[in-house]
Length: 394
Length: 162
Image (cartoon, each protein chain N blue to C red):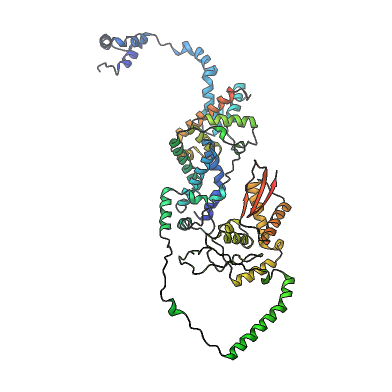
């Protein structure tokens, strides 16, 4: 084989070991003559290689020095810590002071997970009524999940899809029906005997009302307690896309007029902030869920039958009602998880809810918000009900 | 995975994922955004990801989202940004040692920090860590080894232990 710069090192080693033939040695020297830069390697190759017996004691001593042993020891100790298979692990001598010290240090590198709490976990949970991604997209497009973090963290692609959903929503068109006059009824002549009968019936009705009124006053919370005050608002556009032809009359709360029903549904206009707040408060009583109540859109405007039911509900002592207990439990849970980070005592939670409900009854409350503690103001617990604010300080 | 199982994932893994991202980024707000984005991605794939795969999916997605963000931002946040309350203190080790370890952890290269946290905090195997970080098992093992040696040397260097 011809000696080249790629294989000359093998020839040098063979030369040092004295195994080259005379021809090979001659070839090697000829190669080095034309490659003088490799002379240094040739000189090194001439150094005799010591026999193992000559160096065994020195090398053993070197292996015992810390610089040589620590990396090997680290490997073994880390393998032991990790539970990896490593042949030398079983031979570790922990009675040796250095080994024991290094083992203790390696053990201390094991990280212990600190308690870190993700305080926004509630915003990641999906409401129970959302069962598919499609429903979620539709709900986001409708604005039903406006407070839901997941809804706003969607990717650009998701935003495009959601925009698509929103684009297909119908908008109300103003269309005038020109023949209204044709539909109007002419005034009719009513016979005298019918007029007399109508007058007698009216008098009888007034007489019955006079008899019933004092009893209703004693019981309280009767329909007579409710003052019906129309609130004029801009014409709302409901979800059907049909513009209402007359202002909606909202009956004033005193104390309960709007509430939630599980059977009939009607959307509340998002623009009607006052009404929505009121419904939110009543929704809390009815469903015991602040989150649901705050959304407003899921709650209903009462009709006459619902009003009567609401009155019955209003006559129930709040502290005994399931709704009140549910709200109490909710406040406790929120206080524990999000605000105080501790379990509030039962009397504290009950007192807070009692005060809140009392304010609701007086019609001064709006939407409910429970805010986390604020170190700057020293507020530890903050329960907001519209204009009402209940706080516990540090 | 059902919606109920998805919500269970939020309950079980949101804290762990937040801790993992927070310890890497040292930026609470950004970490929160990444956790939210990760759960959004899980929700979008809720029908494709099984409940058993969910934790691995969350950490894999969270890790890569975090890496993307780091590369995009090219910044190294200040460790002091993290409030002390978020860091917690171990029950088994003294607060001093925990602080020192956290400091040492913050000095590790990102990949070493990630693998050792996945190993110690989450108890993942080499193979699982490899799947999350796109490394092979040998690379994971080497990074964990280097991380432990660095942590150990840091403990020695400050002459606090022993």
